[in-house]
Length: 121
Length: 121
DNA sequence: TGAACATATGAATATATGTTCATATATACA
DNA sequence: TGTATATATGAACATATATTCATATGTTCA
Image (cartoon, rainbow over all chains, first blue to last red; front, side, top):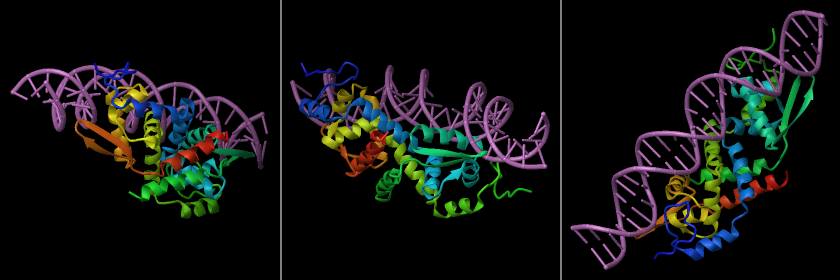
């Protein structure tokens, strides 16, 4: 009766087959979209955003960041690990102290673009 | 003995007071950082990323998106609500069918910036 | 070597979030 | 008016995630 294409898992029918097919062709590959979502997930937390903003200005050690944000040293350390794994920050050691800094200068661009959206609302 | 400034909540001491103070001054206000994190949180999900990419190409109805992504209609509807609340999509109704489309053309810019980071790793 | 300190890490906990299911709402049409 | 269909929505559930606590690791310095 109605045109059912791959409505296996979803409980509804295709309405505009042409549009769906065209969109399907221009969609970036699954893996890239996954990676993109993972990156934004890292940005989707106030603590990590604050850390990155701090590092825009200066390299900082873990203790200083903890004091700056009024948070537990352990919490900061955990989040720095997330940022490091995402390739967003790097570190250098100097004795006991570990200094973190930005590892990708155009993270600022992404944030600026984000602000454009926010301030337009 | 050591300089303790506002290490109330955190269990460590300030090491570089000057840096902390300078960074504190240039940090955007709390609320803006929160909003920014909220925006990126919306981008931090594969389903929503896919929906937005689809809408870059064409307006689409809920059913078509569900078929395209091979997902439950309800799941799509829930996510569209999130995107709508974030001011990222808008909709028009035509009979039973609800068509969603982009409400902010430079979302694409943000994604492009994100890709720059990803492909650099 | 031992005390003090900066950082990292694992476990535990509380909270947030995405999807599904069932169902409600709204529109079209016979 | 009744049936089919498109969408929305609330509850339930499973999973992910952020923070804290306790503790381990590694470095400095007396």
